[in-house]
Image (tube, rainbow, N blue to C red; front, side, top):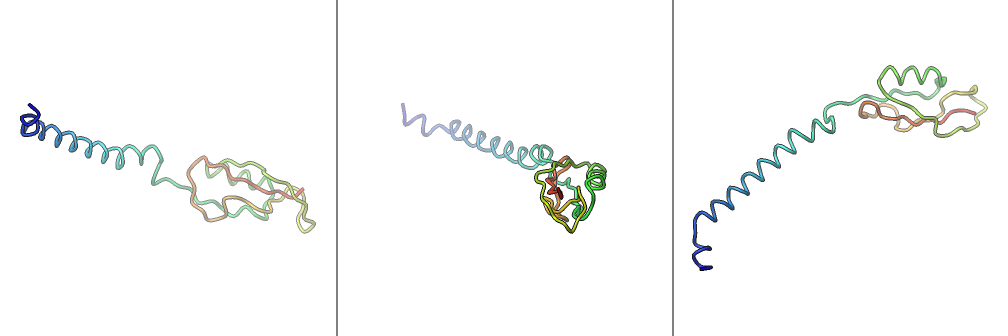
Amino acid sequence: MIRSILTNKYIYLLGLGLVFIGAIGLLVFDKVLMPRYTMYNEGVTVPDLTRLSLEEASETIAALGLRFEVSDRRSNAAFPTDYVLDQAPSANTIVKPNRKIYLTVNA
């Protein structure tokens, strides 16, 4: 009985068919579905926001379709109040649309 199952060509064809369907499904998932889900070819270059006022930085960020959050306030006598001292991610980095930019602002 087991010998007839192991020598049956339909069992091997069924297994081969399942492997083929699985490979096609994996390729569709990898090449079609995931790039759409992750917005693979879409990106925005982060501008240099340092040495801008917080108001100018927020306008620049909004115009590019990004968001921002003031993550830290530090005191630096060389700059006026509410000027951006640092940012993350750094300038000229390519990020996804609607990404949040974290700003360090002068207190």
